[in-house]
Length: 210
Image 1: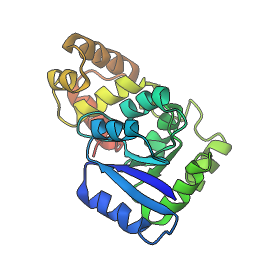
Image 2 (image 1 turned 60 degrees about the vertical axis):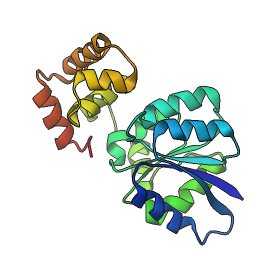
Image 3 (image 1 turned 180 degrees about the vertical axis):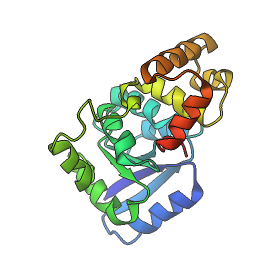
Image 4 (image 1 turned 120 degrees about the vertical axis):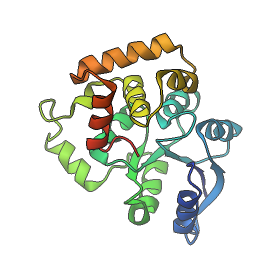
């Protein structure tokens, strides 16, 4: 029996994932978490075969959870579930330690296959992204500017674009306001932007915030 932990702050999403998996005899949704910290605590309690993790959580982001688990439980497969398209985040989260990336739009058709793939030790991405990578369509010259950001810079950009102040971001990430300001400066330079308004516009135009 494949024991699955689902971490997503939206009850409707959790219910939908349960419904998709309810008729699969060798899979069981044995736990749910509504935030990143809750997911970590349940993972640390042990007994899981796979974690299905939303990349956008209300406290700790999927990136933070991935980094912790990469050190604490590197053998646990983590399947990222996201509203964002693969071209925006998939390669980044795979590099961060995820075993697969699945969009919520494709979850009804691909969730079972994706879980089997990662539990079996493989990586899961959609056929479309696999073809793109195989043919080198993600070359540096064609990749978006946000791909040049570090994971933390990218996270700060997302949080700024969602309306959080630097002080709120600092509190959420348990970092100093000065550190967050430094990340803001770096991401502005890398992306050739000048103001917070331009950050928000870029994130919205590229589908980087919900």
